[in-house]
Length: 101
Image (cartoon, rainbow, N blue to C red; front, side):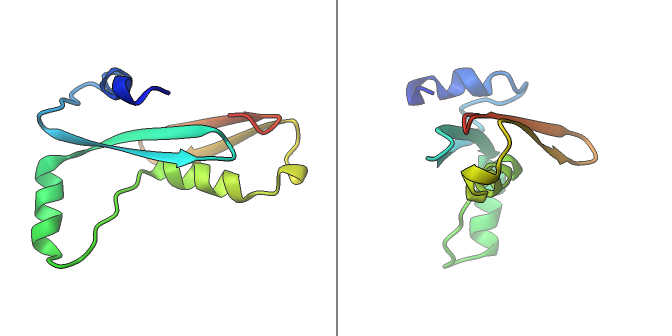
């Protein structure tokens, strides 16, 4: 992961444009993983206006999955483990091998 290449990573997702989106990153130290995602600036502005005075924190469902894997005791994970997150339109697969993603 190189922070300077964040838009290269996100360009895999069609329609993600630096003018219209704000990039966020979330690091999971033990897994040595950084999750990168983008939120539309229009949506962010709507949220700021809808929740004035509130501190807003942005996350992505994949970050919740990685955080939950991070909380599992490394001793209980078998050497080759797959974690799956399923939704009605996507599947996220995290392959864990010897505590490495």
